[in-house]
Amino acid sequence: MKKIFLLLFLMPPIIIADPLDAIRHETCSWHSWSGNECHPQKIFFPESVQEVQNIIRIAVKNTIPVRFIGSGHSLNDLVCTDNGYLVNTDKFNKILKINTKKNTVRVECGIKLKHFYKQLAQHGLALQNQGFIKEQSIAGALATGTHGTGKTGTLSDFIISIELIDSQGKYHVISTKSNPEWLQAARLHLGALGFVYAVTLQCVPLFVLTHKRKMKSWAEVLANFDTYYNNNDYLMMMAHPISENVLVYTWNKTNEAPTNNFFIQLQERLFSNEVTNYLTIKFAKLTPELTNDFINALFKAMQQKEHRELSYKTLSPIKNPLEVQDYIEQEIAIPIEHFVDAIKDVFALYKNYEKKDFELVGFMTCRFVKGSEKALLSPTYGRDSAYISLITLSCFKRYKEFYAEFEQLMSKYGAARSHWGKYNDLTKERVQELYGENLAAFNQVRAQLDPHNVFTNNYITQRLGMI
Ligand SMILES: Cc1cc2nc3c(=O)[nH]c(=O)nc-3n(C[C@H](O)[C@H](O)[C@H](O)COP(=O)(O)OP(=O)(O)OC[C@H]3O[C@@H](n4cnc5c(N)ncnc54)[C@H](O)[C@@H]3O)c2cc1C
Image 1 (cartoon, rainbow, N blue to C red):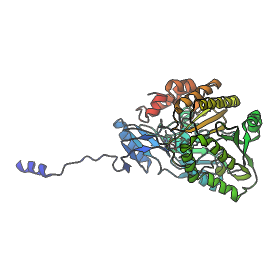
Image 2: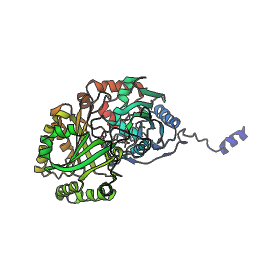
Image 3: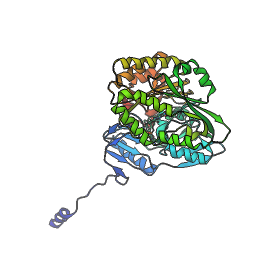
Image 4: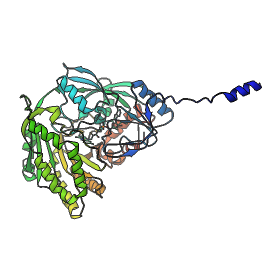
């Protein structure tokens, strides 16, 4: 007996291994591109679907929230969790199948858009529309309804099917054929339904666009807005808030080959590189009172004469956007027919703040997206929309008050729906007002796919409520 006790005493202690230890992970804080910081329990770097299923299984067992990271380019705390698990998706970065007869592609969730677009082009395909940058992951971009401009929908509208792991670890292929009501929720899901492993998207044959950027007076553009909109396949405006001028971007489809103009390519590189971004931001912070003139001059230098370029290059011209801790942007979608009146209200808003000595820097963009009823929580649900985006730096005080007034003003024109991936101060009550019964329909799907309420965080609870 004595010997047994002695043996037990001398035996090394049995350490019960954490079943998740085998998956590469780190214990550190995380922050988004724009500086939203959080302190997850662990950040995992899984390399297989099975590893993600294990993470979810253990998280559910221990009631630990799980959030997924795309590229961290949402301009708010949408990705964040304190004390939960963060799951990095970078290893899921492959195109799985391309069907050049049907122009469809099946692709893993974590591929960065810049790599995705390039590989699609090598197979003679493109998306009909793109956002202004291409740093995002495909799943992250779809999760928030990322959009560009043009008479097509948001990226979420191009989804044919989604492959998703729910909170019970079950693998679902969600499509119009198998479960259309789930697809309506899963097209724009905010990471609240589960792990999106892959998506199949409708593409179009690779195309060339004639592109032009010209400085015009706001008065002329607003007086002729319908003509601008109707006569161009893609239309966008970028302006300094209190300038009388606006930089008008137009793109039109052409059957001719790209121009390959060396000077335009050089200009594009210069204006979209990190050094210029860095200098602009430094300058804006140091000398806010000079910034208006500076940005006006910058816009003038950004004008481009007509040339032709492949769609995937020209629709997303910004390369390597610098991490900007102070960058802040609110973008609101309103019914397109009210665009001209709404923009006049925005001018009045800026003028008002100017009088209040509000050192507001930044610029605004206007883009136009075709509506659909494909995604329950899409800002373009049920109506063709004008997206008006106001950009500033958060070091400029009172931006919250400014953005609240912006939203209130836009509400005159119908539901003023903020971009989910940008600054917004939405509450569940407000989301209910903006989306009506779509919120309940979304939460019903959420309750089926995540009955454990594990794919949640403060952002989700504040806006969609608990389930
Ligand atoms: C400089 C800049 C320019 C931008 N330009 C545009 C623009 O032109 N148009 C536009 O519409 N938006 C634009 N955005 C916003 C941006 O497109 C969206 O916020 C987009 O969601 C970011 O993609 P991401 O891959 O970084 O996703 P993240 O921000 O990392 O994640 C977004 C959401 O997706 C979830 N998620 C990510 N991967 C998965 C997965 N595999 N499974 C489940 N959930 C997942 C996350 O949990 C989170 O809820 C811009 C943002 C920046 C910083």
